[in-house]
Length: 408
Image (spheres, rainbow, N blue to C red):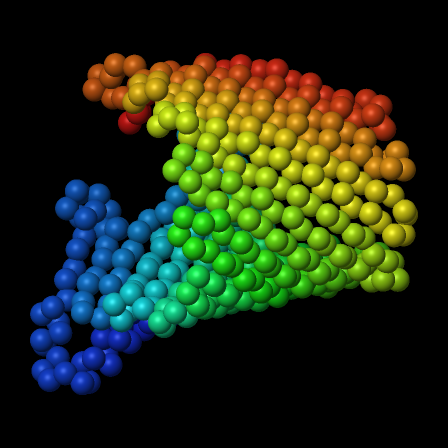
């Protein structure tokens, strides 16, 4: 019943501009003659989606969606074939009104397989824990842009599960200056599991950006947020905190490189500790450099310090990483990445280091029975050291040879 109501709502939303125009135009058959229907999938002999409708005031399209979550493990030997990875499938509908001034989009997706990638024989579309619903609206009125976003996914959905996000935002352009404001909420435990608490995060954000062609862009953003738990089960400790943050960023985009340098100050009050404060400073540098069309380098540097007033400890977290992508031609691809992260506290309770690295060499071979074929050699290395707790050190080195024959 719920699915039918949602479908009726979408049909009313798509039909509303047509109804309003039909009342003003005589006869209404003139409008119907100008509506164009396209069905590219039907022309190719597959399913009835994608499908689109076009008229002077409305353009609507329907597309199927699919998603396979990436492997969480960095160990290559934990990888499984694509046919054994869990997948989701859904339908997204998008419509544009008034020559692009108003755009709406909605999506409904469900798990298409189980955790082992095997399709289920039981219809699970009515199972809310394995479903995701997303809606978005974007409008433009002169120099002012606005929008509303909503997304909710059950705890068993394969893509960003157990989370609801809703946000409204507005943006006003004033020459080289742009003012943007947003408010929203996020929470977990969407299905209200009585054994778990729901953590709700509320935020309000306002930012000012100054940008001029061929000049660096300067932005300043202030965020005020609050975190609170609700539906706490018996014995659980409630969570209450508020934070204020200020970020200043400078970014520049050139012909062969772009970079962004940001600095943040975050002040958090923990109400469960009598309003005790923690102060954090974070600096981040992200850059991309393309010395030639076939080579891309992307380094990242960051450093964060946090001081806790209730313990007096200071936590330091430096991080550095770099990635490289080299595409010599349509047949040869080489990629590599490496990173280092360290976390330590002044009281000696935290002291960990992590080193990760991964590389891939891919070569497109001659087609096999008319199908494009690729062979790749991959290697990965992970080393984690914990100096405060013995026995938690890990090290892994793995390699993989992958042969991919398309359309098989």
